[in-house]
Amino acid sequence: MPFEIQAHRGARAFYPENTIQAFCKAADLGCRVVELDLVASKDHRILVSHDPWITAVLDGHPLRRLFYAMEYREIALLDCGTPSPDFPQQQRIEAFRPLLSEVFREVESHLCRIGLPGGMVYNLEVKSRAGLEGVAFPPPGEYAALVVEEIRESGLAGRVRLQSFDPRVVAEARRLMPELCFGLLVEELSALDGFPESTGFVPSYVNPHVSLVDGPLVDKLHRYGAKVVVWTVNDPEEMIRMRRLGVDGLITDHPETALHLPELSAP
Image (cartoon, rainbow, N blue to C red):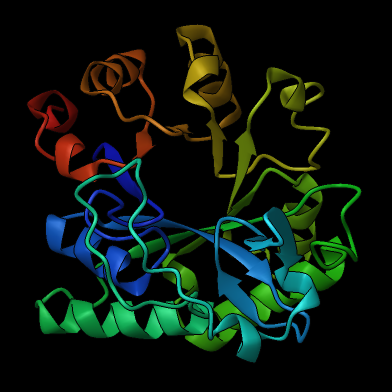
């Protein structure tokens, strides 16, 4: 299997994150996997956004409004096309936080236009955190059911992966749709205490933060039968180091860099 390069929230060096333009640009660059983030609205629509809130300023003070407390028709009016100062080459665009169904539809249409029908894998990160059920996110079972329904309706299940830091959501989604490809995101090594008994199964992917990765961890996860895709790797030397450690791929804000490193394409 070729070394995998995933475009983190799309091609963020060119367009604001998690927009349809960013995902289409990732396809133009040659990426065949895009990573995107999912949250839910009050009316149970699954939308694409890294944060489950928007921050506004009221009387000089920042105020967060949770998307889970807003209906999607209101969320869709909020602009998200302003360039990030972290990515100085980003273009200003007119954009809104799209529904997952809209991302599927628009990216698939774009792939057909550029002669690559069926050429994209969608790695969906379900944003969820214990203690925030019913406040910022739906309860895990309800949440998983909403996302699985979107995946079923898309007809793209064979090219979809579902991952989360919250193993409860992953387990619930697997119960509903066991044929789907699953991943567990890892921010601290303690999340792997008792693995795989703690999750109840071995996901196809276990995806740790780059700061956690060394040879023994990669070997351990491979022995369990899980592939390892590391996040978020932006430095070219670090990309090459991860490749030499034997990981199966990386998630990066700069796929335009990773795709042109010969060390990553070498067998």
